[in-house]
Each structure stands twice: as C-alpha cells, then as structure tokens.
Length: 399
Image (cartoon, one colour):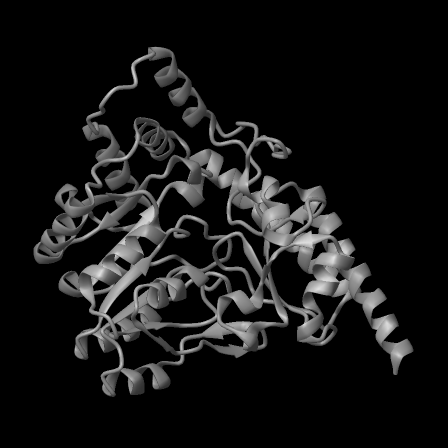
C-alpha cells in the first residue's frame, strides 16, 4: 500500500448496514441521516479487501487454525504505536469488547457487587452492570467549558468507602472525546490498586487520536498486572466491526484461568476465519489508510465546529482529542424534553442522545458520528442549525 491510497466513501443504504438500514426499527423513521452507530462509511483498507478476496477464492471454509501471523501483527502494532509489549500467552478472543466486558463482570464479581463508571459514558458499560445484577457506582466526570476531567476526589471517596469491586475505564473516553494523560491514568490506577479495585480498560478507540495528546495504554503506566485487563480491536480503527474479532489482554495467569474456565463452559473458542484474515491484514498494511482517515475526521470535526460557531455560537462541542465522535451540548437552545423533536423530527438526524450515556443530566447533549463523507457532516450541521432556529422561533411565538 502507498500513501496515495484512495479513501472510498460509500452510501450504505440497502447493504443490511445497521446504521443505515435499521433506522425504522431504532428511531421509527427510515428517512433520517444516520450519525449514530460508531462505525465508518468508508471502505476498509485495500490490503484488507485484497486479503479477504484471496481467502474467499480459496473456496475452503472449514475449521480454522489461528495463524501465528495474526498474533504477531497485533503485538507488533501495539509495541510500535502504543509502547505496549504484549505477550502472546496473554491474548484471548472475544466477538466484541462488549461481550468481553459482560463476561468479565461475571468472572470477577458477584451479584450485588459495585462496579464503577464515569458518566457520561458508553451506555453498554452501564447495561453490563445492571443486566448482570451488579450495583452501578457512578463517579461523573467534571465538565469545564466543554472539556471533561476525572473527579479524583469523588472517586477516592467512593474507593475508600469500599463501594467498588471493579471499575470500567473508557480510554479514550466515549462520548466526550478525552485522551487521558499518563498522570491522570496513574492517579486512577494507583487509587484502584490501593483499594483492591480491579480495572477493565476499554481501549477500542486507542488508534483514533485526532488531537495533540498522546494516547497512553493503561497497562504501560505502572505495575498493574494483577488488577488490569485491557480490551481492544481493529474494528473501530479499520471499520471491521462486522468481522466480530476483538482482543482481550489478560496478563495475570489466575485471571486467564478464570476466563478460560468461563468461556469453556460457554463453548466459545476462536472466531471466524475471515475476521482473523481481515485483522491481520489491517495491522500489517493499514497504517497509511488510517492516517488518511484521521485527516478526514479532523476536517469533519472542524467543519461541524465551524458551522455551529457561525450559526449556534452558544452550542458547545467538546474538544475532540480521540474517537470520531462529537459531543455537542445544545442546552442553550433546546429544552431537554424537546431534543427528539428538534434533532430527529425537525432536522431529520439520527444521533445518539445524551441521555443514553448517563441519564437526564445529559439530555441536552447529542453524539454525532464524524466518520462519514464531508457533505453529510456539512448538511447535517446545517439541518441541525436550521431546526434549532425554527424551534427558537416557535418558542418565541408561544411566549
């Protein structure tokens, strides 16, 4: 692959794409612009497409042995781009990070145990707590001018009170776009270590760094071998979510034994052949494609921010340091109870609503997926601004 590889945008309607073809089911309307599910509207790298085509042409799709090259590609990538020297024996398969979180909640905790999160946060974290009969312990992030920070004083109080047995870390943080510094991660992990709190680090967005801050793998901050599991995948990085191939990094032998016993009872072995082929090819040859994608995301973020600044200057878009997800606060313009009316019914947009990420405190927010064509982002921003202005006009008439 070379640095001039074309990034191909696709209209995904009619391809059984969840983001585009499940609008009616999820939002009740099929004619919305989808900016919700966190995947991309761009074809995967050419190296991935070529590897899959070669595999398909073989015509043999029987039981598959995971090749050493798959592990080597991942370990090389982690060391080169994240400074994390992973050992093969630590690696385990999961069809996704979310299943891995749910399995680890069951493996490492008992019903009723407290599990910590920092809202607003990716809502499957909270579902994993509640669906498995555990107790949700929330330590909300502190917001200052649209930028979010860990509230370590609050977190330390919760830790000292013994309210948490496990904590789920989102790094980079979805949906607020923060890339945590080494110092922030160190303070958090040291607190957890001191109080016997196990940490699950979801680092699935760790390659999608679009700001100036450097992403730090939690496991590289200090000695947390016995209290930390890291989960990641090529799925967000290279748009491979449908391949159902995620990686769980478990350095502690006893935790690995528990994982193996649990997944053994479920009879979950390895993943599908195509997933391994795609992931290996992406890690071996997809870097230039990723760099081009990051440039597109930066430009799309700047486009959205620019339109909002011109048309809705009091809307607050949080600084985007990592992920391709914009977090926008519309509280200066729209009543919380009217968000769906304005965003969905008037603007015609399908987004992730802020309330999903932690309750009513985040009702005035929306999360917008920037990994799509520039024209989609520009049009969506314009439609949103027009809808908000029309809404304001109606509110003025009703006063």
